[in-house]
Each structure stands twice: as structure tokens, then as C-alpha cells.
Image 1 (cartoon, rainbow, N blue to C red):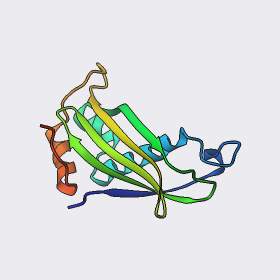
Image 2 (tube, helix red, strand yellow):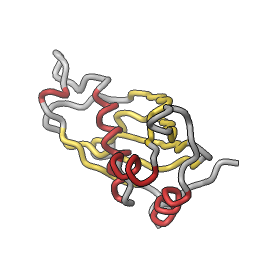
Image 3 (cartoon, rainbow, N blue to C red):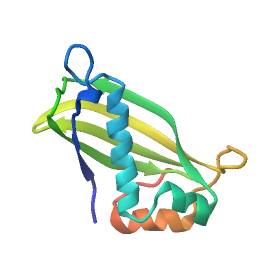
Length: 141
């Protein structure tokens, strides 16, 4: 049973600002890729969610703190794990590392929504089961 998922990200020129470091908002792209690939690793992607379960995950909240800068061509590692699964939400902790240096950390809440009504809906049990089959996940109380 896994506790964490890791996804490599290379810093490209387009990710950097005029100072040659990763523009702060681009860390959101990096952590989005980490969450997307974690879910894909258990068989959940946006198209499948919409087609098979009539729902989608959308980000409701992100709390991010920056610790150090990354530069062009560096290879980063996005670490993602579950803090909890709620009735209609997933809470993730995500961190972006360069070797042993923490660059940014974020707490992310993704809600399950009906794509027609754009209202919160329960996470399908089959989706929860796919996640829990691979990852240790605390439940909400």
C-alpha cells in the first residue's frame, strides 16, 4: 500500500520569469500534474470520471507556501499524498522538491462536482475503492 505518489517535472524556459527562476504561479501547474497523474495511476482520469461516473474533480482551495526557487532545466519531484477523503472532497498534501530541498508545499482541496449542475456531489464508491486499493487514505470523521 502506497502512502505517497511521486511525479518528475522538468523546468522549461516557459516556466521561468525575467529573473530566470520558476514563476510562482507555475508551481500550480506542477502540482496539478502530480494530482492528475496520481489519480491516473489508479485508473481515474477526467474523461473517465465524466463518462462513467457523471462527475469531475475541481480544485476548491489551495494554500501554498514557497521555500526556495527552482531554475530552468532542473529536474523537480512532485510528491503527492492524501490527507483525507470526505463525502464529496479529496484533501491532498503536495510538495515540490529539488533533490533534498523543499521548494514549495501546498494543501489542496478538490471537490467532486456534477458537470451539468456544477454542484458538489458525493464521490462515487467505485472511485473511492480505486484510490483505497492503492493508497493509504484517512477518512474524514
